[in-house]
Amino acid sequence: MCGRFSQAYSWDEIVAFSQPLTAPANRPNLRARHNISPTTEIDIIVPSEAGRELWKARWGLIPGWWKKSARETGSTFNARVEKVHESAFFRSAWVKRRCIIPASAFYEWTGEKGVKIPHRISAAGGGLLAFAGLWDRWTDPATGEEIVSCTIITRDADRWMSAIHDRMPAMLHPKDFDVWLDGSGGKEVLMRPPPELREWIVSTRINSSRTPDDDPTLADPVESETPTPVNAPRQGDLF
Image (cartoon, helix red, strand yellow):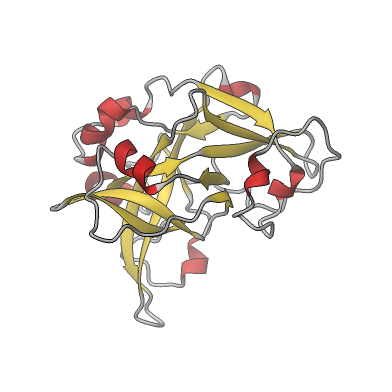
């Protein structure tokens, strides 16, 4: 699963990574975030008539047909690749609304329950990772507010990742961006060997969703710490 990740990049970096974005006249300010939690707003790359655009979306997909509150969707921040095409929550987005979720890194934990040790996992070469995602558009029946939301697709861990966790985000190679976004690429695209990765242990401050996510020291390696309980949602990856 993927329950925490980082988005920290410059405008020039994300434009180039996206091959490229349709750049607006005024470049927006991009705030680096090193400890993103579910239900908060993240960057996603979506195809449009104008080209590829960078949108903001709630991390935790709400299908357009949903009649209850956003909170009542449960944990929809991950979608299992094995079931995504048949899940009522995700099957329409699988066919019609795909996105790329850029990431500087993601986090997984090892150790005993309640005292988890966080590992930061990033591209070995230091570039950005491209998580395969889905998005949808929903109108809150209580307020009339329109919300764009998204989910990260996950898959079985490869041999390298399995030493840390049994799941991992499905990651795209640049050559597959087009076929993923236009819907012509299927699950075989998501099951290709992921980019080469690296990892290191980081501060257990990352365990708390209350830790300010704009603190760059959250990415720094640490030698050892006394683990503290994790309060991040860990029940995801269910759909």
